[in-house]
Picture 1: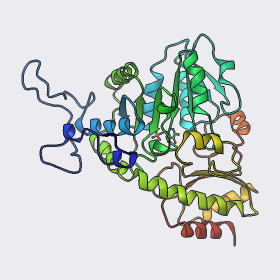
Picture 2: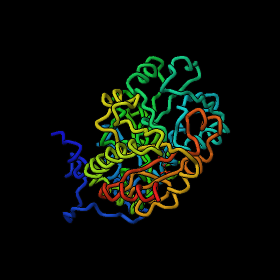
Picture 3: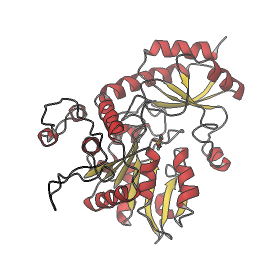
Picture 4: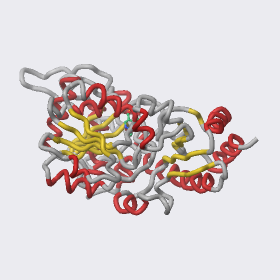
Length: 381
Ligand SMILES: *Cc1c(COP(=O)(O)O)cnc(C)c1O
């Protein structure tokens, strides 16, 4: 029987296989580096925790199940996961990446991937046909949707028609929506990446990353990479992510409901120039998002009238914390230009409209009226 995603957050489909003999409801933390062998050629299935550890294996199975992948590999951070994906490519390969991406991914692509001989071509995949940029050397297209922080929506199915036609990979960073709202593999992607630090963990207390593969061949390559480069998720952190995922459905629904209320409230404020949230009917990506995702998420970006007002808001918020990161139960406000996007080249910032008047909210699960009160006192004297 195939479970619904709400159930899959709590129970694996083949629960029996992985259940501990004690009957523990919470999956045990196997805090061990190595495993004893029963004899020559007789392994329990576990040899050394860099290769695999039961707790990590459990969270990998859960995440693979949520995304509908063949396999998922758990890394020590989202960036470790993105770095591992880039190990699929060789010098001379070209990778097309969307222009509006998480700042850390931009830093990796422009400094490390390029140094390793991989040509990175930045394209606005929301407005420009990817076909125009695919060459014989193109091996993959990498994107996020909705994008960070400008919430551009990219049509995954449409891009996948091109990547399939040319036999290249489509890699989607699905951090912003989590598998609860969007499953890129089902829309034609080949690989899904997550910063598990965000919605999967959900409590702003653990770093983690995932690579979910859509084929057995890719899964084998990712297994080889983690075994060889060694950035696997630790047993305790694997357990924290397992625990976080148990409430993924509830958290996503509540955070989204709060985000919709806040988006409407912000729209009514004269000091707010624009509110960018794909759940608003007027958002240019609203219809595509309805077709490819089960919800709009809880990330929203807004622009105010002046840089001075930005400083005032960031100083005055009390309940809302001025901090980097997203996807946790606490509402966080971020100033992309000095935080997440500090290393993004100025011409990209300008083209994407990431000005010194733009703020990003990761809406949490607090009472929404308390959040509005907090913003009200931060905006007005
Ligand atoms: C945070 C984030 C990452 C990086 O993840 P870490 O866990 O911080 O290394 C990658 N992509 C997106 C969209 C993110 O928000």
